[in-house]
Image (cartoon, rainbow, N blue to C red; front, top):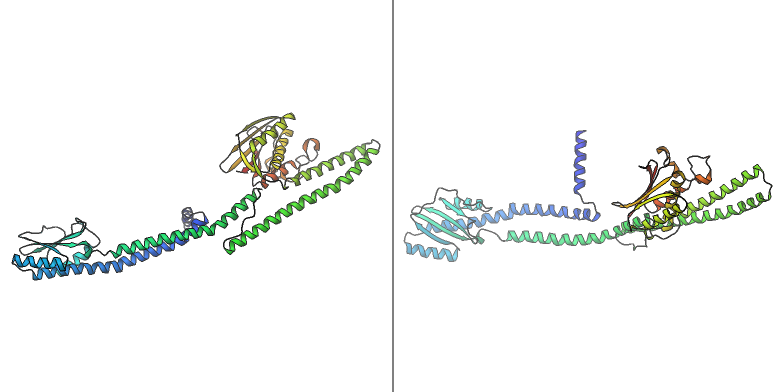
Amino acid sequence: MAITVGSNMTMGWLRRLLPRSLLGRSVMILVTPLLLLQVVTTSVFYETHWDTVTKRLARGVAGDIATVIAVMPIDPAERDKLFAVARNSMQLSLTYVPGAHLPDLPTTIRETLVDENLNNALAEFVQRKFLTDTRSLETTVEIYVQLPDGVLQVAVPRRRLFSSTTYLVILWMVGSSLALFAVAVLFMRTQVRPVRRLAIAAEAFGKGRDSADFRIEGASEVRQAAAAFNQMRDRIRRQIAQRTEMLAGVSHDLRTPLTRMKLALAMLRDAPEVGDLRADVAEMERMVGGYLAFARGEGREPAVETDLTELLREVVNAAVREGAAVETDAEPNLRVTLRPEAMRRCLANLVGNAQRHALRIWTTVARRDDGVEINIDDDGPGIPPDQREDVFRPFFRLDPSRNPETGGIGLGLTIARDVARSHGGELTLLDSPRGGLRAQLWLPA
């Protein structure tokens, strides 16, 4: 169990470090092997080539110094001639200080990467007490060798001990890696662009907005996904259109016999049975009208940028004219892309539902992080939590025996949620802080 928990924590930590976008992950897949290759190549280069070259350079300098010491004459005039030859042919600047002694210090004043190879070479060839300084001067390395009657000071050009190919190789590797990385990023951006367009089109279609046909491009898998999306979108549109047309046809077919029944009932004498039949016919007409209103919620109304605050105020003003007590608190100029008439029907159903069962209504609309939230609160009896999902079913009524004139036919909330979801939003019922029911409508911005 402890291993499983530790593994899950490690995986969660790795997921947080990984990039979230497809472009970021694709670039990481390309860059990670490249970085590993650079690290391995640099390590191998430093352990083999650079170390070998540095050793050879250090042995060459140590050998030259040992040769000079071996043939160095006692006569100062002859010594100067030897030092001149060494300066011209070996690039060694020699100075002899008679009677001097090296202090008892470490062989190296300041440690560098080449000091170990240089010290080993001097110890092997010179076999005398020496002192090296590779950091005091920028262009030369100072070497001091203790001789029996003095100190030999040697100034060696830095290029004789340091290989410039080391830095050139590193610069070439880093430069080529950056160039390849830039090419890879440009290529991956081109490959990811069709995926982003497909995601934008799918999101727009899910919010009920018209997504213009986008060009199918990119890799074969992306083209296949784009073609499948276009086909799915066309099938959904055809299905909605067929459903709306079918319901319109059903309405036309049902209204004709209902009209004949109303005419026949009008010609009959008043009787209790006739009154019941007239009430049944009237209820059938309301049900057919409500079913058509439900179908119109999925019509072909285009989505346009709309001032949601103004739309809510229009719905509230209409309810106030009918005698409702409504208070509104809304942020100004909340513009959202939606289908205005469908959203007006959704808000009117929610406000009307609260108006039938409550004395006072409060409406608020405000922008949230990822969308717009509309709350419609009332002080009515509310709805039990275990029945809040049932009321969204078509033709469902909490009290089947109540009067349809006051309770409706059970399609108001169904139409409201259908409109909300067709915009990519959601409608939920909650407990209101006002004591009744809260209808919370969320729409993506």
